[in-house]
Length: 61
Image (tube, rainbow, N blue to C red):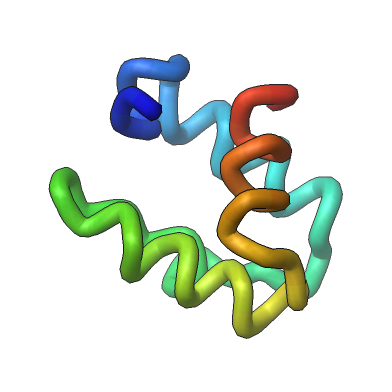
């Protein structure tokens, strides 16, 4: 999979995730280029979705 940024504007995607999952904070969605696994780990802890499900969700958004 390409990086998150190549899938669109991260800020827009972050806003959509926050709307869908109100429990997410800005810190939960902190994206640092090249460290996507940490982002997925943080999101997994909060919304209890697997990395595969999260990647699928990112593609849909």
